[in-house]
Image (tube, rainbow, N blue to C red):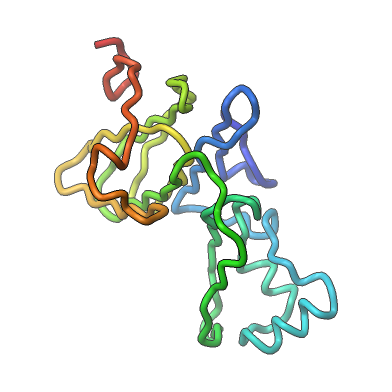
Amino acid sequence: MREALGNAGQVEAYRAADGRLVGLYVPATFTDYTSFPPFVDTPEEQAHLAQAYKVVSPQRERETKAHLTADELPLQIVVLNRDAGAYVRPHYHVNDRPAASPTRHQILVCQHGRVRVALYTTEGDRLGRVVLRPGDLVLLCEGHSLEFLEPRTKVIEIKMGPFPGSDAADKVDLDVDRGPLGETV
């Protein structure tokens, strides 16, 4: 099932029949920051913002920073569109608990060309497909296939680790007998 998220519907969530997230598509043209505001509601959060960031105001932070993923996902997607002079002080991110997920999630970012990504549940149900163009990204939580549509298409993949040592150990092939467009082969 495809679900448009945010006021502008620019983010697309693909969900299995039981509601679990299978993929999240974010186009390069994303601008709906205010639908996915960061946490700057309490005085403590605003004080932290003032200490850790150089931004004009908490309101401007809501207009330039979008938290697109649920807190419980083992990968987080945040889109930033900062003003000139904005600054984030040096930091790192503490992992305060082990990630709990039956699959290793990954993000694909298209840098050049076009690639078609089909989204599948782990049971092999195809939920849809998206075409990534330069600047687009997709979060993949379960099954997927890729079809490169133009010469020299360049895609960046960001995946949970660690790598298990071999390609065979890294993935489970879905026995869906479908080609890149979903046709039976």
